[in-house]
Structure formats: structure tokens, C-alpha cells
Length: 495
Image (cartoon, rainbow, N blue to C red; front, top):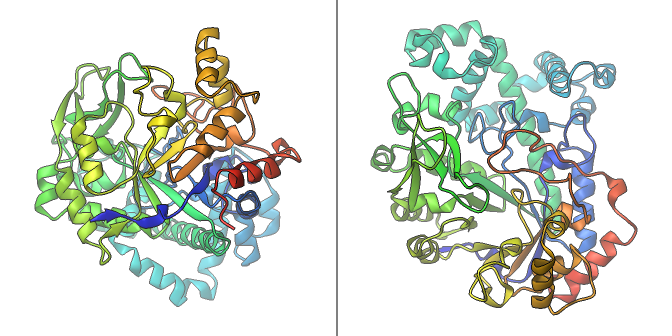
């Protein structure tokens, strides 16, 4: 068993979430700006586009705390696509009243009304989509319909007969909320259609789509409500223990994520059915997938639910080798296009698990300059079967990171890098591209040389995250050509 041979040669990629694209109202979406971004990548010699998870989020917008591990985020649906098919009136499209979420939801409602009145509702394309995704879509559409009917209330607070999924109550809800259920089905159909069209375009131009699977799912999600037996919950559906990490680079008290933990014994007993379905779905969207918090497959940080911080937690072993063996054996080739997010407190056991399956890991240059010459993130310690980043969505921009270094720290960084004349972030971008790691990923903020105020996420906080977007005006005339020259210089140009 081994990871996919996608790292058959040196490549360069850019990290940019769909919502961070220009265009659209309130957030980027799967419209023309996404295609224009693919063209930008091609012109720069970039052959990998990495995004964050594209599942529907809660109000905080975090793509790592989603309402479903399978569904697509309807806020990413491009409305012009609906106008082109005659399902949305252009006047309704142009009437931007209310918040962006209210506006987009209203437009999708108008589109669904027209869709149901057209022949498309009975088309083989739509009916086949509903049938093909029935395994998760039935639960998701019912979950979202009930949730909407109860003003967004978390499922643990629903009436007991719905919370506990009693058959008569579910049957009655399906009948009563049939229109809402149909609306959700329609939105998922549109999302997946638009996504596959974008992926086809990107692949046709030599660009691979690189996605992200959070290891845990949100407590208030379809997955936990529909499969309560697979999660460590109380009788009322509340987590008995929650996920997080101990004190680390980002937080002195650790991070209390709050996700419920899995009942690994029950999941293993049913052959990891949910995991197989989850990976199958994600691999239908992406050419390559990152497993967020891979170390949780070897051991996970278990925190008592009543604890306010992560400091009271402890490590518990997980059946990662059995799970990964099941996943790899589920594909005929014995290969899976995976990368492991192996950051944080990584033990020899975690690395042994990753290396056993030949899964590439991550190297973060912003983490490289502490701890002496043995630091694994320093370029002289890099190995080819890895992905090197200047920083990730959880890091500050490289320019802002460098601005916060002390005079001594900055001098050390430049001395290690050979005292180049280039300024930040260019000097760290060049170091990433020069690395022996087969893939180098650059956050779009670093490509644009952006500093403070352009961070995507600050771990351990819940305010002002996930809302960063770039503008085409931020690209100078030299941005693309200079990046292309650097990619070509370091042997990562695909043409």
C-alpha cells in the first residue's frame, strides 16, 4: 500500500479557498472568477490549487466545523449559472437586499421554484444525482429542513422524537417539510454540477484540485445526528468528551475544538463504513486530499466536555493502521492521493504510521527557525516525499510573520538563507520553491506580498476568521511573470 504517485515530479501550488476569490456577493464562489484564477495559475506554471473544506458551515464560517462531511456549501453556488439556465430571473439576481447570506438564499429559493416548474426536475441528470448520493443526501436534506424549521436550533435541542430519530416523527417531518427538503436537494445538485464543471476545466488546463478532510466533524452536524451510535455521546446527544490539542505553537492552553470523539470500536466493527463513504465522496471532488490532524489517527487528545480549556485532556490510542489499511484496500490500485497534516506534537509512532503508508507530510518554513539545526522544517532537513509551505491558512502571512520577528530572529533567518538581497515574503517563497520537497504550496497572500490584516484564521479564536478575500487589483503587472520565472528556475514549471 502506498500513497498516490501524484508527486511524480516537482510541482508548485497555491493555497486559496473558494470563498477568498474575488467576485460574488459576500464571498467568492464557483463562477467566472474561479475560472479566471485557473487561468492565472496556468500562466504562472502552477499546477496545483489547494482549497479548504467546501462543506456547508455554521454561522462562524469555519470550514472545519461543518453541517455535513459530504454536502457542498450552497453559498459557493454561482448565481449567474442559474440565470444562464433560466432558473433565476436577472432582476432577482441584481436585487441585493439584506445580508449576503439572505440574498443568496433568496435567489436560490427563486431558482428552485423555476426549476420545479421546468422539465429539468425530471431529467435523468437530476434524478441520477439524487439516487447516486442518497446514502448521505436523504439525511442531510431532512436535517437541514428540520433545522431551518426550528430557526437554526442545534439538533441536541430539538423535540426528543426528532432528536432521537424516532421513525413516526421523521416520517411526519419528511411530509411536512417536503418543499424545504426539495430545496436542499436542488442546491446540492447545483453545487456538485458547478464543482465538476470547474474541476473539468482545471484538469483540462493541467491544474489539479487539492482538498482537505478535517479528521473530526461538528457536533451539530448531519453526521452525528444520523449516526449517533458512532460517536461518544450522552443519552441527550451531547459529547461526553471533546476533541482538541494540548498546548502548542498557537496556544499556551491548547485548543479546545469541541468536536465529539468517535466510537472507534463501533466504527471498526462495521468496517469503517462511514469513513469509506466519506473518502469516496471527497475523492470524487478532488485530485488530491489532505487529512487534517492526521496524528489523530494514531492517538487523539480527549478532553472532558465540561473542561473550559484543552489542558485537562489526555492522549487515547486510535486504530489508525486498521482504518488506513481498510481505506487503501478499498481501491483497486492500492493507492490513494493523500497528504498528512503532521503538524503539532508529532511522535515517532505518528510518523511511523504515515511512512508505513507512504503518505507525504507537511513542512512549514515559518516554523523552521527555532530549535537549532535539527529542526525538521529547515530546508537542509527536507526530503522529497513532502509538501513544503511558507505558511498555511492557520499562519499569519509571511510578511506579517517576518515583521513580528525580533531583530535577532530576523538576522538569524536571513543568515540561514544566505543573506539574500530579496525582502520578505519573496525570500521565503524562493526557499520553498528551491526545496527538495516535490510540491511547494504558497498561500495567495504570500504571492501578493500582503502583510497584516490579511490572515485567514487565528487558531483558538472565533472572531474575524475565514472572511479574507483577494482582489484582482492586488496583482501587479510583474506578479505572474515573476512567479513563473521562479517556478521555472527551481524546476517546478509543468510545460
